[in-house]
Image (cartoon, rainbow over all chains, first blue to last red; front, side, top):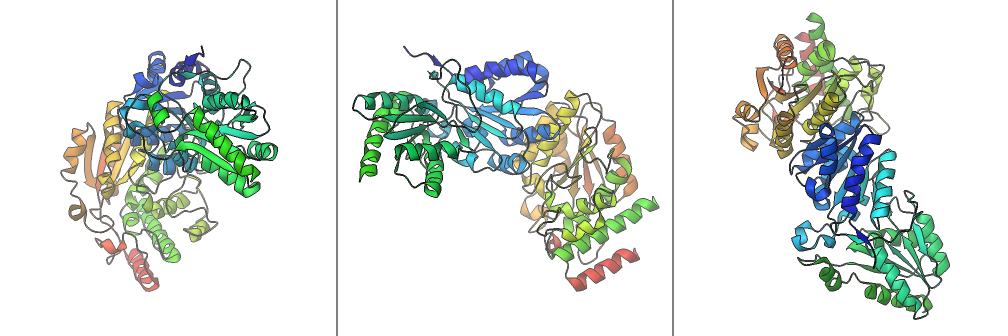
Length: 313
Length: 268
């Protein structure tokens, strides 16, 4: 049985630990602090924890002000409320000023499930990657989420980290080392490279396993940093396997598929197939939504076969 | 006092010259705020022009960032950069952007999208409290800017966190981009709104230097509340054909208008 841990709970606990190490760390919440687990930090450091209620425009601009005064503000709320709602504040107030604000968003994507389309951020990777200076990270599991959070706080500059609501499979092994801005090769293979982020990395590994039984050898790369994207590993993968499949729990435009396509078409035109959302979803249990909206290892396998056919033709 | 009045004349000349040179920019809402910035920069703010990022400095946040000509004119008079830089206003490779940007020495916040400065000021004021520092945070808002909902999110939070080290000034010139504020969106009863949000409110003549100095003194003595100074001003103040004229919100004087405007400033 694969162990499942929630990235939001792990990171919530970590922030409380990092509070001791980084005395300038402050956490800003928007009345969702039990759900984001930032209440753990709040209980430990009540003087460095600020709730603003659901007023996300205010939260982001306050964070910019605190960063300008030397603090390391963490904005902690749901992905939809942390990105599209205060986008102008992120753009003018944080990105254009290159201020040291960290957006740690939970409940991203359709994994958030029953709350429905308004709560399901499927555009956040796209719009956050469009903000110059922002680093965008989509961790594949709780181990990576912890290391990415530490790396974000240790480095200067605005960062967006995308976390999920439910517990998700732990895929990284002991000794795993997250490197900001670098893709991580999990499996070597010759016929195709599957590049994935977030929970889709687990499904890509499962797809690779079943394709192995059919004689198809897959390289699997975890692209947890979306911006700036690791061009080297994309070009290397294209050279080695000649075919790419991307897999993401995000809308098909502006996310991993678009970012990888741009690198490929500029440097080494290579057949590419995408597994991603092509519409808004609806309310439902995450596993049912993944099935209905095509985010499955079977869909990844189909894309792999299609892209290999294209490579041959 | 005479020195301060001379400063206001010098700053008004810079505003007119800069916008005329650039053939764009926002003279009206810059001219209305001249006395406010003059009192702040030459009477109140604890700043070092040779160390613009000094961490204990008082902060001045220009939320109505389109009025950056008055900020640039004041900063150069205060020694943050040479007067020759004013020629580069709104020009490529210059340091003086069309709306204030944090990269300019002395500018504490990047603006250009209305409504964000008071929140930014809340963040700075909270940080000062956390660090046990005595510096103050001043935020200049436009009256038209107060149509933005975020202003009121910030106002609520400043009171919630007892930010007596935060002082907002509203340049109440009663004209916004298109028309008079009461025609675009009536913000009255304005004083009552701030009081309902838990703020000390001081209502004064924003062109009267003595009143401004007194008003800031009262604000600085606040025990537990943030203070807003509603500075009643005249848009385009100092140039008769610009005064109370919405056309000069976002339009620069032409060469003939510049000559007339400068001679009016000199004769006052």
